[in-house]
Amino acid sequence: MLVNADFHIHSCFSMASSKDMIIKNIAPKSKLKGLNLLGTGDAFHPGWLDIIEESTVPTAEGIYSSEGMDFVLTTEVEGKNKIHHLIIIPDIDIARELSGKLPSKNKNQDGRPKTQLDGAEILDLVRQYDCLIGPAHAFTPWTGMYKSFDSIYDCYGKKPDFVELGLSADTFMADTVSELKDFVFLTNSDAHSPWPHRLGREFNQIELQDISFSSIKKAFKKRDVKANYGLLPNLGKYHMTACTKCYKLVDPIAAKENKMKCSCGGRIKKGVDFRISEIADFKSPKHPDFRPDYIHLMPLAELIATVYDKGVTTKTVQGKWQKLIGEFNTEIDVLINASISDIEKIDSNVSGAIEAFRNKTIDVIPGGGGKYGEILFDKAPKKPENKKIVTLDNF
Image (cartoon, rainbow, N blue to C red):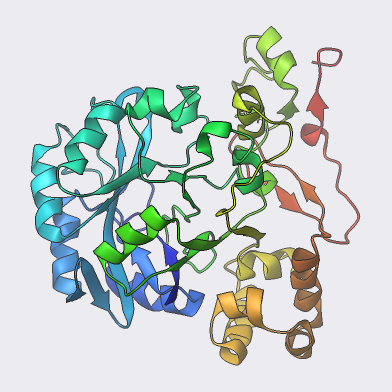
């Protein structure tokens, strides 16, 4: 069976997460998105595990269901050097036991616990319990594994189970790194709120024998991810090297020459694009035979907001979103499966935006420094001063 899965979200217990990130909100909104399987996130937090047990029913091995949405236990852990790791856990009993064994001072306060264990130590610990593990948003400059290591094996000591690419990278970028040729790539939302433009903004289409933990494990081993869906990487807020204060895009060489300090006084952060170029073995991607398609998309509400120049949570945008969902059942169906002519009957402006995505004819002002990129479609390009790339000559 082909399943749409998002393995990485956060609960109401994680720092900077919405208080609405609880099962009764997440489940119905994930269904409207078109997801079939969702990671719970934060599964080392005792309070969140209590809510999961109270709000769901065990329906299969390692699967907990609510309102027709299936959940598998997942968590993100911040290890040594502030590197983030994504863990998929067989069941609640194991989650509770591992939570007790993880040396962490904040695991009862924050859904994303911090520990001084390094990647190899975390891998060895969770593998004792048959968990799956890999780097979360592997290339992200603040907390990605490749910010500190040039090789995934230097971090983990042995091969982890997958690599999560993150919002600022895609398969075409990651497959320039030769050591990743044997890895399953995951694309997940890392959602902190239940809004439909957050949940499932990136997801995986994966072939499973059934929805169970053992089937997920087998699918990763067999590399049965059939498609990755995600943002254009230059829409990611860490794609380009940029200032974290004024968001100017800065030439990486100029940034290094100026000790990563911007002319505004802010700190410059190395972008995913440049970091991958530093560790890449190939100028263009070399995809292994099993590598599935990477299909770029954008959350429907954000598309509508861009087209109509309105806030994503305004009544205008949400009303148009609801109308399209009412016609085509799920957001994924609108973005991927519905014919452009059928969408055009509902909203010709939005149909043009979706067609541009499908035809790869959109223009983007890239993101960086903590600010998301901007889609232009067929609008006249905006040229704000702080968007230009700064070089040594004009730093």
